[in-house]
Length: 617
Ligand code: SF4
Image (cartoon, rainbow, N blue to C red; front, side, top):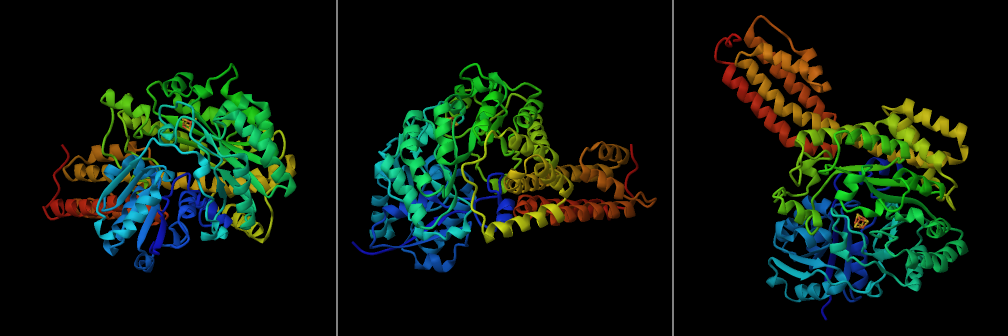
């Protein structure tokens, strides 16, 4: 068979709460995780082909990469929508056939633009055959869909990832996968559709091979078990941890510190919790989803209602076993009470969950919710999940909520603004550290990279940061109460840096969008003679931005001069606010700013030369 140059491309992650960009700047790494899917695909590809991997979160995709390639392969998640379409467009322009796999094409291939192959389902079902066919007949590739969904192979078929294709220094964490699939029935979740309702688990010997491969490639530090739900088959995973992973870690003096995602059912399984702790797990992400029982029932999250133990106590159990608990929450369910925002905030603060990811319900394809909302005629179709355009506080909902959309968005904003304020975030860190019943089995290694990271944190957060007082107050309290947890506190605070800054930037973006759409109306009203109403409305704005503008407005006798001056103030304020945003957040308002400028020019052209403005009614 002919040799081919195969280019593996991982699209760019947008800035989200999950991207941890600001924390990565502190640690000096470029991405939180390597592209495990592509590295695994690389492991399947026969040796006679030449491979090159471009992770766009680490290095740009260059034209010379495309001119080198006979074929490009991508793997992507829903967050990669914009970036993937750009990669496909570049491949099309360069005449390089491109084959796309992963959760995004599997669910949304119909809505993705470009001439490309779309492979739906798990790669083990024949991805390679499709790739070879495309290589041997490149001219024939137009838009093609190969559907292998619903077939779930034994994980013994999955090769070891090709760790030699990446530079470990670029990444904060490494990843392994021990299981796939989930037996739970959360109505918002697409995992059972994508990976099956039965938990498939790798053989014990295979798990050890995976750990060996990472260890021998030179990795030491944190490793995420990227399983959909590590404890989907509790008995099997406990045995694997006890018989293989714990001895492996003990023998090498715990080179890896694990974290994972697991259903909170694990809290009532002391033997499994003990095994996880002894295997070196010290963090766990759980889907708590909601503190409201009716909402948990609405979303089929029975996993959280099992037994009589309250959810807060289940979190405490995990903390007592030595785990830092991270959690996901969902708002916007039909059953949410009016005080949902306050209840979310109270739960998250009370439980001491530093990293709490709170989102509005997303109705994804191939989920029970998709069918439910479709049946009810409440599905919003044709939306593209593009964070670049939507921003962290998306105004685009994927379903019609029972309450006014603005009310829902306002509640969501309130939760994030509150929990990711520096004071509230550091309070939770303290609670989490105080509730931790025992320290991790082994702390991450401290070398020159970690020392440099600590200095970057002290500078970025403690000296140049806008919340330095809260930062030092937190670290001082940790030093006084739990000096042994100081390094963990610095590391937690670095994660908080991302959450705090991202929230602040996202709030600015949101405020600017509101400002753009409303300021033009107000200025026009003013021009049309409703000056009093205009000033009353400006005063009524809660936003800082509008208050700042109001303070800077002049009130000249000469109406023309007033209009000109106030328009300039609006433009200047918008440009200052725009300049204060960080790169990717600017993109989210760029179009809005341009439109705003055009609107101001239109108003000036309409009213500026038309003689005196009309008097107010
Ligand atoms: S437990 Fe997690 S992975 Fe499993 S169905 Fe629920 S949300 Fe999905």
